[in-house]
Image 1 (cartoon, rainbow, N blue to C red):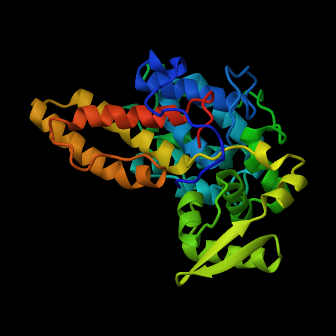
Image 2: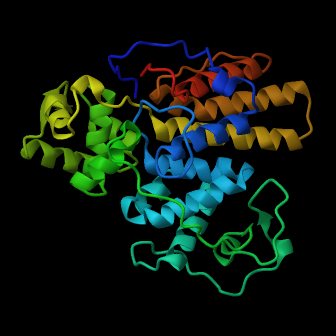
Length: 352
């Protein structure tokens, strides 16, 4: 969603020192730690993020990048157990971009259900007879010894040790910018209403459509349209008909007063489902390329296919991909695109 936030801009190609001297996986792990430190993990953040985070998009992202950081993975599960009532299981599944995401989410939801049985978690049926070690793929990329496999992850084909919750996580501070989603959920409930309001408030969208909000929120266009109709009827949002299409506007002054903030002090927007989903695609693709043999031309051709795959989501997030890049030019184009995404993850930039 290419919305203006009314904030100053920073060049996307200027990746900060926070991210610049590490591998991609290390950069993403550092980003995840910094976000979760502000959401309820008991560590100090390196930087305060100016944006409102999307909890489910961040969880699915962290489940992948934390395969390089087992401690982060385990602390995330502990946080989810502590704060399960604040989460949307439906949105967790909607954030998945491929089968790898779905396996991680299914295993995580099953683990939560085992430790906190609730009908809403509705995990897949799990056989308590754990599969043999040699039939499972290691969850973590580091060498982690496994005496006894965790049954919930084993049911998803993933091998990891049994995890007992640490109990160290806390509830998110609802007054910090990054946790706006949780504050709106406390007011409006966990569901479409809180997501639509979060997106419209932070994006400073003059006029939004149901299609745009559906893609940004992870809900269907029809459900978003119905929700917008309800918010218009309640006179907390305005609806317009322009060019044969319904468009919607939100009164930021009214909502900012409710949230005890100045309108200009509302958090900024990021298209988290698109940005974090694309990074997972790139990260897994790079891991596959490291294992593959092939000529430079074949690698370039594969890179062009990757760029074609991620182009739509990046266009939605306001990042252009050169459609005309040749196989020879594609690797450099991928690096440029990757740097543009990483710049959006730098908490010290304030561009929208």
